[in-house]
Length: 406
Image (cartoon, rainbow, N blue to C red):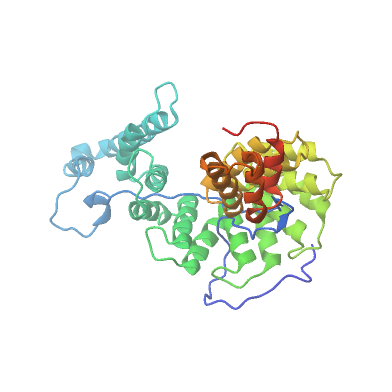
């Protein structure tokens, strides 16, 4: 792996040097109406609960109340006759905690019973309040994603902290993401890097990928493509789809390695085979443009469609462009507009531009009064479109020749 040209170091305000963050790759430039490969960030939400029960958080209470479980243990110690029962009490408590967590999982996943996030949350809360780290992490996730409870990043933060302080790598990573995104807490890339680094050193693949992203983009530490690639590889070798996609992007762009489209395709394929939409879209782009393999617009459409059906806006836009140009599919401007509209609704700016031009123009021509002697509505629409967007809407006009616009 060559770190020649593009291993750069950008001075950062942070002195921390771990590795982490979700993927958000720079967007490649457009190809005709399509867009190039990219590997944007994946959102791994984190959620924290309301304040944990007082007995969990306020360990210095000298005269306050204690929970029933603690009291039962104290009762055992209060008389030597019951000393031998302590172990059985503790075993029973541990069994109860696990049972509470398992009930939560059953309702969360809907195994053998109807899925119900609200009930799942209640069971997780019981287990989490008894110190179950997986349950604490689950509560953080549910708060951050609004599953069973209103979305609340501050509460998510609290629960993630409880689990992270006990060394739980997954919660450390989620906590890092909250700091990176400024969700429920003041944004702090350095703190995010620290948390990602701690989780990554435990071998947690998502944190390793996130650290790679932080190095690649110089967030919270100096930009370093070589170290980014090192961390991506650690995660990718564990089968992490996003890391595999990011490695493909590094090879496609030549960031920290020699540009190699063949290697890019190999890593995109590994990721796409796991159903990762960013990689599916990138693979479609490689097929469309003959990068690292023979040009095959039919295969390009297939991969764009896989990603588009998962709601990935870049793929939706590119698929619309394939229909507009008749590449790999029969030319169909109606379908092109449908896919552009889907992408536009997600905030894709180029799709919004195409969608607005076509929809606004067609809406206008439906209501406009044509002066006698100035031709049909199709001809009038053609005149309106010449200045609005030559090329795209004019094709729509040509397609409607001889047909009535209703």
